[in-house]
Length: 437
Ligand code: HSE
Image (cartoon, rainbow, N blue to C red):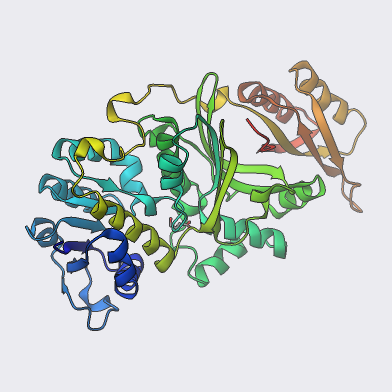
């Protein structure tokens, strides 16, 4: 068989790692793919930063030339972000080339348009590396679990956020200090907004939900809350109650529609996912036939991400000769079989809650708080109250509640915050038991 020629857009960390894996494992990769894979041309914006010595292929700063090269059958997009990645990918598809991408923002925001264009042209767009780095979670859900009705997906899908939460717990350090440390170590970007405010995780959850439930990509419907407001005190109180705070992406198929949410969550310390630490990622899938399965591994980094990119490339090369209708559909379900199940607003979602409030150390305050919760039909599961320190007149009160609809909880919190004996805002963190759905 003739070798397949590929082009690479972007020679940063993942691009360089992909070249390395293709070179180091060339023999095994071609034995798996059925033919040799040859990098023909790689483009990078900053030629002076290229770290490959004697690459054995052309390197230029002309990405459009890669996309327009008639010899190239597969374009690997590793630039990241919105533009110029979107235009280059659409241009590659228009030129009849298959695409492999690690770009979660691109797929979450523009995937519907990209897949439609790809279907019209009869080409493949593969994106395993866009979610959870080296963990083959897309393949597991799309193919390995194809027999199942998937009930829920719960994931630690941002390594930077998980590193920060882990360090805050282990060192008892505040968020800002740990973030600065993560930036110094190169785990967090100079602008950490996407990681710590949950945007990166929301991109990934959007993709996971689509392939799990057969719904169009709907990034703008994901409820997103970050970790910047989590205090070390909350982490400590959660531990005392037998829970750990993790920043999770949750997608659940419930009776009223689809839940799509990214926010901090108290989960039982004994659960496997509560013990996923540092920069590692993990995804817990609950499905009707198989039950719960969990996938764990490196969610970022040059070689783990390259592992997913090259696996996609092997898949594309293997199916080059298959009829487009006989290939695995981009979003797991056939394009004409996507469902219009609504994504539920956060107010409609039911969870249990951790509440922390600062109360005056006076008789009657606690009974006013429990009165509000009781009237709202919210049952209290646990209460934690500390003795006031010397000279202090206010104390933190922590409560765990039973499951209740978010809209009811919002109303109760508003009333509690209006009590004269309560200072400031009530901190609220959702609680999940992670039992079978
Ligand atoms: N910034 C991401 C993370 C890595 O921290 O998990 C790539 O998705």
